[in-house]
Image (cartoon, rainbow, N blue to C red; front, side, top):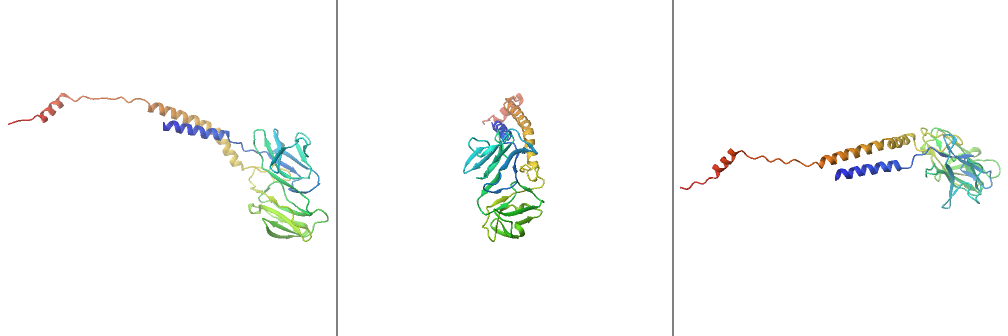
Length: 273
């Protein structure tokens, strides 16, 4: 009985592994590669890509206010310009991602549209460790000026001409960034995301959004390939063990020699005098 339960448990684990979502290399491409825009700016172009090529069967979706809409939905300014690209007018922002027909998802990209006097130009897509990144504090009107930069509500310092350079970024540079000037209030906050340079995805201006590391992908693929073999082997062994365990035992009874009875009789004889 215990063997049967073990077999069922192994089979269930394998089914769960085989039915788990596949790690996707598809990502959302954003052009221009920025998170903050002034209201009324030129539209932003979005597409789903896989290793730099358009990914078939994937849809760009936007989530805002708890509602999710597909690119090209009727009556929405979140429209499709062809089979590969979507655009949205910069009246409202949201969180954008790519979703496949089977439910796989890419990393999410947050884009905000601001009516404030200043915005922070910060990459929408993750940057690779070891790369150099420049943030720009950009006013709606006029030229850039000396600006103050903030990460996670802590002032990092000031940069001339509205620039803040991050050299050889690492994980510690991740966080929510914003900026302000002597005459402009604080900009909206946006998160800088950093990925290890070993990540399979690129950090170019409009590359795919980084996915989980290749080692994780390989592990999942190996499990998917190896698991059915393990399940079949375990089930076969359990059936064999169960069959062997149910084989009736042969009972053997050996009779004692006659001489043994004589000895016993001699021992138990009583003598009366």
